[in-house]
Image (cartoon, rainbow over all chains, first blue to last red; front, side, top):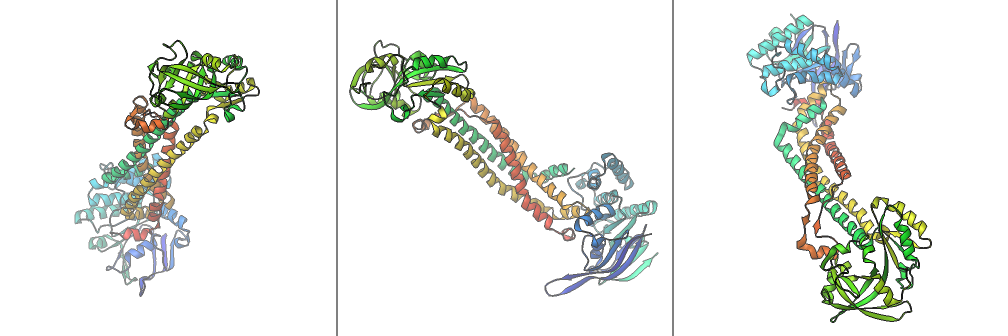
Length: 227
Length: 405
C-alpha cells in the first residue's frame, strides 16, 4: 500500500541575483513498511526534499500525497495537525526538550494530540522499553549520551503513531557503536511493527542497512535501488 | 504539561531569571510598601480630622458657615443635642459656641476661633483633652479657664496660668473683652489648627456675650462607628429641621478629594514601577525565545500549534513575573504589617509635616484589595511583556529554525 506519492516536486530558492533549484522535479512513491535511505552529496537537496515531504518547507510546485491528501493544499493549521497525527520526525541534533525527562519528552507529543494520561503512560513505557531506555526514563537529555538521546527522539517520533517517520541524518552526530545500535533498533521496529522509515544520510553504514537507496544529485533522483 | 514546561524553562538560566525576579521583587515591594505608607498617613490625617478637629458630622444654622455671624445660632441647640444623643450609633454631641475673635497677651495679639464648649460633652466628641502637654484640661484654674494650642502659646509667649484677654463682639454688636487664664496647652501636631483654635467653657463665653441659654452655633457629633455615617446623617437631618447637617467630607472636601486622589496616585506609582519592570521582562523573554529558536522550530515541526507555543511563552513570562511579584507582595505586606504597630519616625522633618497637618510618626495601613490589584497588575505585565517576544518566536519558519546550528 502506498503511503506517500510524490509528483513533480520542485523547490526553487530565489536569492537577489540567482535562482537555485534545490529540488528539481522528483517523482517517487513510498510503500508501507519501507526502510529507505535518501543519499547524495551535500547540497544535493536531501534535507529540502525531506522537509517538503514532512510538510515543513513549501514546494515551489508539485504534490506530496499522503493517504489521498495533497498535504500542500491543506491550510496552515490543518497542516500542523496533519504533521502531528501522521508524521514522525527525527532530527540530526536530536532536538529533545532539555527541561523534560526522557519519559516527558515522549509523552509531550501525545499530550499535544490530546491522548489521556493512562494511554500516554502505557505507550511511553512500551516505546522507551522498545528503544532500550526502560531504565533511563526519568533522566533528562543532558544526562543521556548522544545515542540515547537519539533513541528517545525515535521513541518520540513513534509516540504519535505516525504513518511514516522522516529522519534527517539521524546518525550524523553519533559514534559508530551508537549508530549501530540505533540502526538495529530502527530496523527491528521496521520489521516487527511495519513502520515506514525514510532517512537522509551520508553514512555508509546506514546505506548498507537500507532496503531502498534513493540517490539525489542537483535536486534530481539519479538512482533508486531496491535491495 | 505546558505549565510544567514553562515553569522548568524559567530555571534553565537560573542567574538570568533570578536577576529579573529580584528586580520585580524590589519594585513590587517598593510599590506595596509606599502604598501602605501613604494610606497610613492619609488615614491618620482623616482620623485626626474626625477625632480632633471636625468630628464626624456638624449641625449649623444654614447661614452660619457662610457668614460666621454670631447671631446665626441654633436656638434650641441643647434640646436638639439631647435628641441626637438618643440615636444609638452616636457616641457624643458637643454643643459649641463658635466665635471669631482676638486673643492678646502682654506681648502680642492673634486672631483665633474661640470654641465655647462643655468640657465633658466635648471629650466625647474630640480628643483635645488627650492632647494636653502642659497644665490640665479645664482644671486648676477656677475662673475663666482657657485651653490653647502650643503654637499659639509660643506666639503669644504665654504659659500655663498666664493671663490672656479675649476680645469679641456680643449679640448686640458691642465689643466685649475678658481676661482668661491658661489652664492647659494642647498640641494636635497640626500647627495651623493649634495656632487658631482656643477652647473656653460654654458658660463663661455665653455669660460674656449674653448668649441665650441652651443655644449654640455648632453641634459636633461623633459616632461609635464611622461606617454608620450616612444613616445617622439622614436621621439627624430629619431631627434638625431647617438646619444644615454636614459630614466631615462635606465640611472638609479637600480631605475627601485628597484621599481619593492619593489612592489613584498610588496606582499610578505602581504602574510606573511595573512599566519600568516591563522592559526588563521583555528583554529577558526576548533572550529566551532567541536562544530557543531551534527548539521552538522543532515544536512547530512536530505539530505544536502556534497558539499553544504563544501560550507557553506567555505562561513562562507570567510565571517569571509572578514569582517576583508574589515575593515582592509578601515582603511588602510583611514590612507594612510590622509598620502597623511600629511607626516610621519622621520627626526629623516634623515641622514640615505638622505644618501640613500630618503626624511625624506614620503607621502604615495595608489594604487587602491593594494586594489583589497589584497581583493582577503583575499578571497583566507578564502577559504584555511576552507579546512581542512570542510574536517574534512565531515568525520563524520551522524549516529555517531547524537549520540553525
